[in-house]
Length: 164
Ligand code: FEO
Image 1 (cartoon, helix red, strand yellow):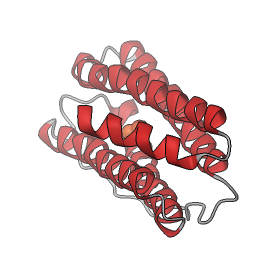
Image 2: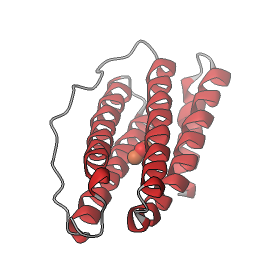
Image 3: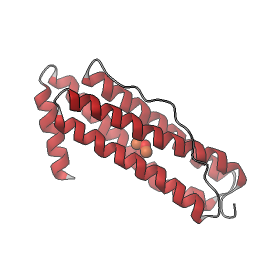
Image 4: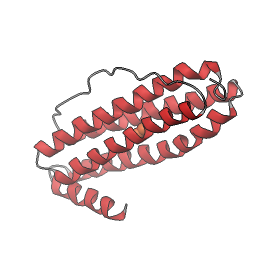
């Protein structure tokens, strides 16, 4: 490792694990919505899963570019099967909040270790997490308002996809 400070390596590897875990968790959530016939919500979470893979790969490529060797982790099993849309999206929001905390801790550590390269690299994720927590919070609110009318939620998600 050249550009990346030694103390950053283990936490960066852990972040790769977190992003890859989010990928699998979002596929599991998408599968739940797919089997419930809620195709817009399913697509939304399949897409989120792809984004999580992209996040993980940003860390992998950054570490290699900076002369470090990422260690690819094994992962715990994601939760499969949910009692309701609310339960599934609450889990997603909870995970995004954990990721935000983890990214913020990484930034703190980079600053502490005067690792400017990693600090700068992480800034994109700081912004991204604000967006992800916001979009998951909004989705959960829409689900609350919709009550049993899940087609309203489907329409909301379809409109989001059309705007993206
Ligand atoms: Fe990569 Fe949604 O955290």
